[in-house]
Amino acid sequence: MDFALASNGASVMMATANDDNHPSENLLDGKDDTFWTTTGLFPHEVVIKLSKRESISKVRGHASFTTIRTPDVALRSPVERRTLQYEECRA
Image (cartoon, rainbow, N blue to C red; front, side, top):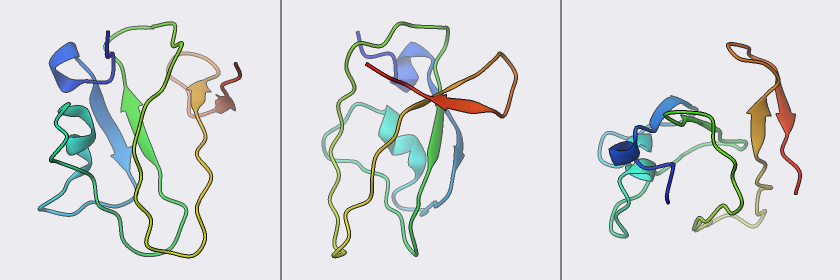
């Protein structure tokens, strides 16, 4: 099941970049022909809230970079409920 779909209750809580034609909410629509576009300097972040606590076994995504430097991708989870502190997710 894809927990990070808006149709399954996921929502974008914060994004460091937003374009009117390609907003961060496009990340959650499940369509291959929509996308989130970012501009400016790295890093870019997006915080996605799932509808409930889930055990994640796989993350799938696609990124297209037009810069020389490819940024790192990191997954983080809240340390506690209702907190702004996050810790790295580890396999």
